[in-house]
Length: 69
Image: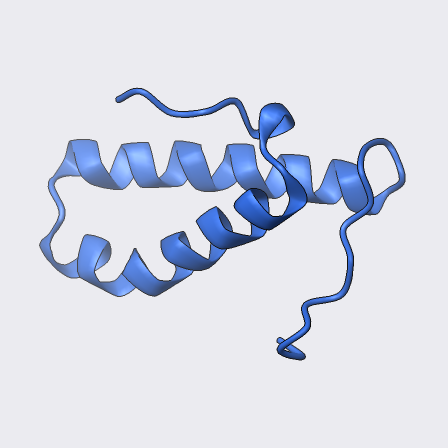
């Protein structure tokens, strides 16, 4: 799978990718292969780690979600 390094994503792209993963979680859990579940877990971890790093002030700021979520 060709995917962007989370450190290179804009704040918007990071948030969007996390949201997409959240939306696809149940389908992956119920219907995904073991490889798909493993890949899902790895990507989720990468994105969450970058989100946490930014929130801790070590990278571009993560602004509040305008939708309130």
